[in-house]
Length: 320
Image 1 (cartoon, rainbow, N blue to C red):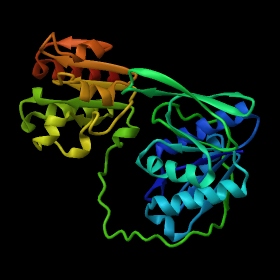
Image 2: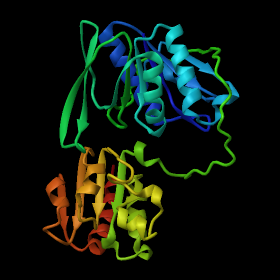
Image 3: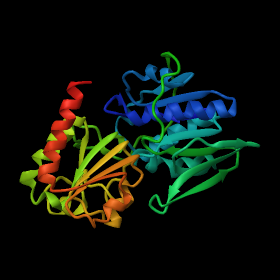
Image 4: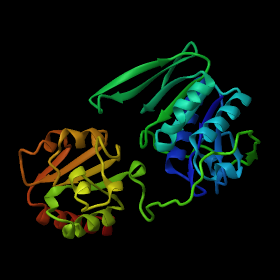
């Protein structure tokens, strides 16, 4: 059986959860077994996971899981995996998944591959999976043997697919110690799709010349339904909040479309965005390193190009 931990936030399933269940269903089909989804804490709409391939949806609504603690979460997932004889456990490669994966692997004496980005091949009970290495410059293939395997799936590696219908949520009991972590306050950014889940990202750098000019970036993002991001120097100078910083030392992303405005393309920045499916670069310097990594490039003054591009997108959307 393939067990998928479906992440939720404040009682709502994450996009990453739908991707993980879709992936889990595909892996289960390759292995000739079933896909079961597990949610922890109070989750609205957990029965919808059946639409993405889960034959069963399990939930434990213990208040212990209302706030994240990697120790209690990994203990609960391990217990459910053992009780259901799961041979493959799938997590999302998010901050939550990264915190759980190692602990879960140790508890289950399982092989672990983190950050996989494609379906495995199955042979004689072993799984062979691929992942990006060296900041996306190469692809490595890992063979995972043993009775139990743990995989974490990169965001946007699989598109959520509806393949079934809703299923009744089954309540399961787990025995875990009370969390030793006490959460006093939770601050989250509201109103935008989180960068790791965003399919379209509009990002800008020092070429914007100052925070007062960011309106044209936000307008373009609003037209495209995109999430905004920035380079490290922009975050370091407090032009934009640090949660928007993408790159090797910030958030690594892999959207379907990444638009880089006024960013030179230093190797540290490229390391965090070069897994984007399509990269568009706008820069007045034709020698900017970013153009070497771009699928499409526009050489020009961003203060002229971006507003014109925004108007073109608006006209296109109005006519389609």
